[in-house]
Length: 370
Image 1 (cartoon, helix red, strand yellow):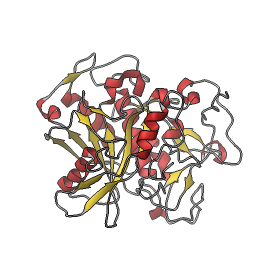
Image 2 (tube, one colour):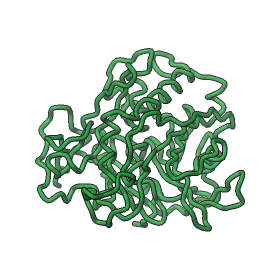
Image 3 (cartoon, rainbow, N blue to C red):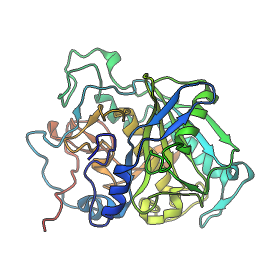
Image 4 (tube, rainbow, N blue to C red):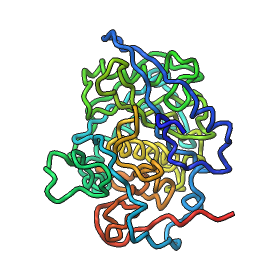
């Protein structure tokens, strides 16, 4: 499989081989920045599979269910591949599409577009400094490739920080979004323009931030489709890199996952809907948190995936997707999140953690045989 396409070996019979083949063979997308003459290429994307496409063990797991013992040789842990992490991540939310401005309602509680934006922005504004985000502070860069932990003498500046106030800006872009986004997981079918990558470049110009710590999360309104969205993936993160060299612009594509219901984790943590958004919007923070933390620990996608990922290229979110998801409380409100893979859990054998620690944490069981 091409190293530019990141699937983390999570395909199951529930995901069609034709869909995966199409995604893997798509050509690199080209986009241009409004304020720069450079052409840009979209790198391979790291996706959050739909619940049906996730590993069977994670799909069937429920809180309190027996879990397999972790490997004693740490072969299941994330491995550093010699690239970079995002040391001081800054999040920008971009609500791309005219409907975000003109307004809509969605879900059993008829949540307004403004309420939905507030729910997502509040999550990212307050997740910094939380024990959940703190799981990522064990990871660093600037160390030899092949390490599964950062040596004790690693400079502090090399580590991911858990600072507060991660939300650096939000923007409702009234530009109409395509009804069908003709991009295949970060790569354009037409070989010329990936509209999500183009929006990320536009946002970088809008916020005047082209730094390596910036993550642009692009949200599209309900009813807008994309190739393989809902059938193969729920969201993804990627980067768009200049063809003449230099670092990329990191971004995440966030379709309106609540419209997928249980397929992307809707109401999987909060069975009852409320007016704040819990329940119906569970998948919005499950997917958003998943893509954010993966981008922080493994931001590069071109020419290879060179941050922290395991021997199958699965990232910290992939390894724990749809497994023991729960609420965390931020600024007095609850938000659904999944645990993230921690190499230091279970005395260094690894596990799915909601906070840092070396104690016992759940581990997804092995896939069924046959």
